[in-house]
Length: 381
Image (cartoon, rainbow, N blue to C red; front, side, top):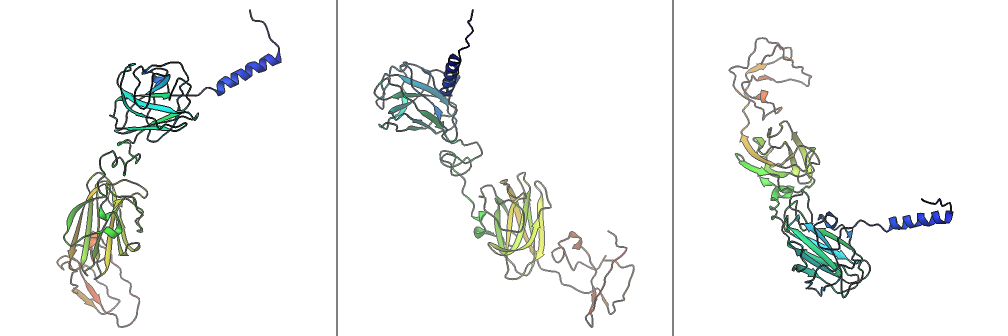
């Protein structure tokens, strides 16, 4: 039977003891012996994130200790499953004592052999191993204090770049490529305006924005910075640009004149949808440099894709008058465009497909400055 204790001093001592116990509790990844228990597992990250790992027991598991002056002394163990083809293990002895770090693999055994070790030979000096690991393989980590069975307090991290996480990390030089990963495809020259590819009349070629690097395009259109550039010089003829997406993405095009960084906007075309076609026709000016920029339709997006691009050039139609009128009070009914020929197209005005086909040209030459009102009624399709 418990005896009631109303002594305030005893209660304060008990509370103090509980506080001390709580303050000294630290989450750590370590075990006294080599095993596969969850408490000893470390999940590799993409950068070094330390977790506590102390050797403060009287357990000497590895009887075949060797390499880097390791001995049959008290040790502490952890393990991890490799997630990349190169893994870095760093142990930091925060108590200013010398540590020996050893990497092993295979089933736990007191006589197992080491794969690599590190012993920089200094008090409080972090020890690091960089090893070519096999993805999915389990590896063991052993830490001991150099020269004896004394306590060793420290922290450890295990990390390695991954080649399929959708971000650039570790030794990668691009997203999931370069370094220890698959080499990155070269950045295309026309990723930048200065490297724009010349687009000649009658060209019909394939392109891609897949390896583009996000660089502000500086056009008047609200579209992605991961794009591709093309250029051509006006020859006084009509030019039609067609760009068709071919890999399941929704693109937009911009056509501007001027020079890189100093553009005069001509058009932003975003009429199509996924795998659609963006098209624009206009009359070029002889000697004027034009730029075509292709990218995903959404500003700030890193979405990229493949496309086919063509440029067609045609000589402007010769205007011939079908009718001549001499007064601004002219009125006529029953007119038709049928049979009058095709003098103008969408390349000449408005950029509208309605400009294609037969048209009727009515000529009026004013004799003085005046305001003229033109009205069409009863038109059909």
